[in-house]
Every structure is written in C-alpha cells, then in structure tokens.
Image 1 (cartoon, rainbow, N blue to C red):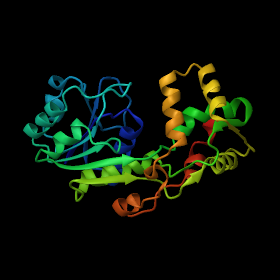
Image 2 (image 1 turned 180 degrees about the vertical axis):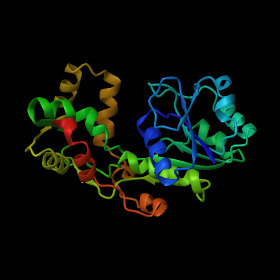
Image 3 (image 1 turned 30 degrees about the vertical axis):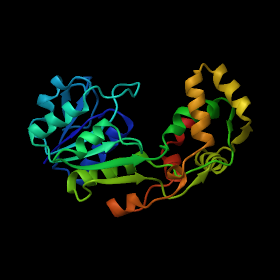
Length: 274
C-alpha cells in the first residue's frame, strides 16, 4: 500500500507519517512538499509539488492508494485554487481512499471529494496542544507568567500525535467513508489548570494573570499583532464553540486506545519552556 501525505512537513502531516510508520512498518509513504531537501523519516519518498499547481502533482499521485489532504494552500492557509482539479487527478491515478484535515465548515475540496468515488473521511481536530509552544514558551521563559483574557475558558485540546494516529488508522484500514470525525483530547482543561499542569511539568510555579479584553488587545497590538488576528483571537477565545470544549471519544474509537492528555504533552515538551 502506498499513501501520499500532503502538508507533510506541517505539525499534523509529520505526525501522520510517524503514526503510519508505527502502525505498519511496511507501508510505503510518499510526502508531498515544496522543499526537495525536507527532513523526513528514513524511507519516506519525497514528491516535490504544490497543491496550488495541480500540474506538478501527476507524479505525486502515481500508484497511490490513499491520500491525506489538507484543505488550504501555503504558509498563510489560503484557499486551494483548484480543488476539483486535485480530486480529478487523484481519481485518474486510482486513489481509492482519502482523509481531509480541515475545519468544521465544508469547503470546495470536501465538496469535490464527496462528489467523487474516493472513500473520504473528514478530520476536524480542535485546538492543538502544540499551540501552547507558540503562545506561551517565550513569556514563561522570560517571566514565568501567562497574561491572557478569559481565564475561565475551557478547551478539549488534542495532542497532534492523536490527530496523526486517527488519520493513519483511517488511511490504512478504511471503514469511515463519508464520516466527519471531531478529534479531541480526553478532558476539557480550563486555562488556569493548563498553567498549573505546565508548571508541574517544568518544575516551576507559574503565575496566571487574567486580562480584560481591552488589556489583551493592547498587549497583542504592542507585540505587533494585526487587527484582524486580534479580532479573531478575541472571538475564538471568548466564544469557544461547543465542539472546542466537548470531549468526544474519537481517538479511542478509531485507534483503540485513549487520547493523550495535556499532562503527557507537557511532560514531553517541558524543555521548550525552560
């Protein structure tokens, strides 16, 4: 079996590859990337191409049984210019199974796959635990303090390895055609508890300071964040949808084992905060 992973150097793509290797050491993996020098696990074939240019993908799809798709293009998460063309290429190549990483909303790629003969499963992970690195590593190193709004917000954060494990199992074994799978962690964690868990992992007491919305806007603006991103964060953090804070047992249903906790993720990544 040969599986193509698009977005192969991203957080989820790398975990899909690692989890497929763990699931079946004999599976043939092909990674789509724009960088021919991309660092990938030994034995993974590199296919140089770009989802924004379907003409570059003919060889990438050749002899592929299953594809892990992302539904966006490039580092700025822009829309795919020709999703129907991508799906047509995949069908012509004989691809029979696919997973799609995306949000809850159905986009053009999902619509094109739904109209195709490809067995497709739609993956909808909630907040990544790994986002903690991006937002919290610097302030914890600098001052041991987290300053954010909405201190009572809860999130059913998911470990990226669990997203990869669900994708790997579906791609390898099938059985979830036309299913939309919301992927969460095993618990909904309040932000203040998240701070405490991370503090225990690094052996250092951390302080949480709750900001008002206006204080948060001023802080993020002073850090160079644009108005659109600030507005997005205020809405996302202040109005977390039910899907983002409700624990769903998808990981255990698909993989046969419980989802990894934030405490596990924190222990694995403690050095990054020290």
